[in-house]
Image (cartoon, rainbow, N blue to C red):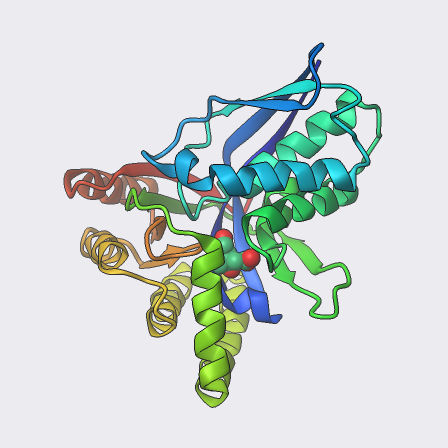
Length: 313
Ligand code: MEV
């Protein structure tokens, strides 16, 4: 029997843009998914998924999850028809679109398999295996989610569009930043939403180039503002990033509503995070008291789930 774990994440800047090789900033959060591998006498693999989740999340992702697990096994040269095993998924990461739940489970499973089959994989190899798993969920993952899940912390990430390993850097801030995460309770298919953005880009490349150059300036400013601990500026840039995501049509009225409530109750900035069209919103709070106030307002407004966390240290 062996265990492994993978962290959840929040994309601070750059969902969707990251697919096209633009930089993104993501923060690992404390909650994680765990995987336990137990060998069994029957052939093949069996999944027991005990992760806490938004209603409908697991059902909606199940077919993709099966492809994802098969991809990881193939990548690691493990043939479950020779030695059968059970995968038990658990942990305290509540599965919802936008929190990196699929990547966290890929990382957890890869780590548990590495341990059970004495593969001795280092973090870079775990990240590669998890990337193959992520391909089960959508054909063209940027690699951001699995990298944030494998390494945790605050990361600056750039995908290599030629298929080489991504460039990423761990950033440390002099002070923790307070974040509220709230869920719409809606689960979107990353494959569908990423595909829709690609169609829009292909239909009007000039429009996409102009939004992309605005975003590139924004994310570079955000990186500098984070390092300078200028959280007011970071918040403004989060608001601006949300507007660009609205223009990409990946936000929705439920996300816009949570963003508005967070801003009205004291957030210095708020935006959707991850795939969009449902999933989660993040809000940056100036201090812990305001963070709790924002979380309370979001709960009262009927958000399907609300969590507080911090990043940067
Ligand atoms: C999904 O969490 C983030 C997206 O940018 C897709 C990706 O990076 O592969 C929408």
